[in-house]
Length: 197
Image 1 (cartoon, helix red, strand yellow):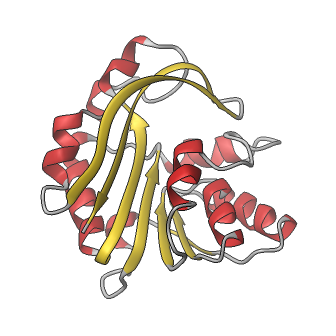
Image 2: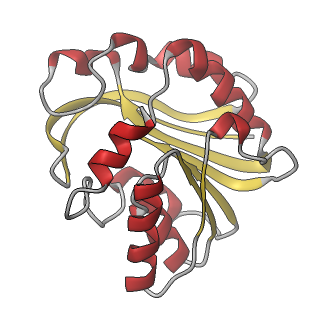
């Protein structure tokens, strides 16, 4: 899996564009800047946007090529991000706490998903917020993007169960028109979630 992401991120241009995901932007704009964790951050579009708002940003991804692109974008925008290459389940984050964590189109196989989500919930400070946008299981019938494996797509009830210790402020499945770089384009079935500890 890592090699496929390195391959994608080594292409010219930014796979999902340089601008932040719209839902991420909408929600992060409402929060007071603090410490932010972005697992599966890829080429850094959300990390760089948040850093410009004053967040202390920690990005994480399995791709070295993603990190290179993210650091290039941070340099262009004159901001600083902390970017680690590694696996979210083994990234040395055990004693760290964050004011916000966001997963934007980060897809795990179902057996790993719950483990990762519960670990992330443990990394939130009291009052911390988690923001998620991901493809729903209905996306399997679309050609716009996303995993072609139903096991890696999300369902509202699964997310509710994964984050049962948090207060869910928003959890909805909707159809949107995605326009993020060359790989996220067209009608898409997605899930958005915002929850607080």
